[in-house]
Length: 94
Image 1 (cartoon, rainbow, N blue to C red):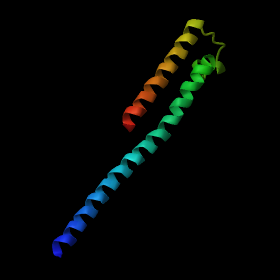
Image 2: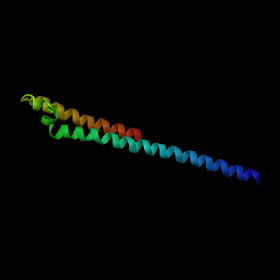
Image 3: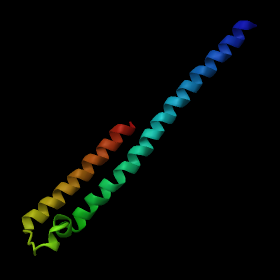
Image 4: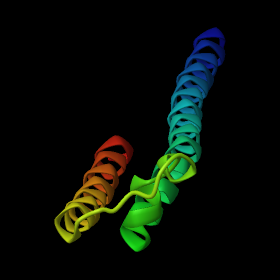
């Protein structure tokens, strides 16, 4: 009778450890999700409006003119950044 009780306790402890590990993983995923949202917003802003994102505070001091090549580079880098960030999130979840 005593061994059944010990077995039940050990099964409950193993299940509790498993549940705690899964909750920790879920908390890490949620934390990473909320930390990545501002990065995605900045990358989307750079993609859709590269001129204002590149001239963030310089517009107050002088009229800046950005070449089309710089705008294209900003768009390409923002797309690559979003792809890499998405792959990082997927690899972190898996």
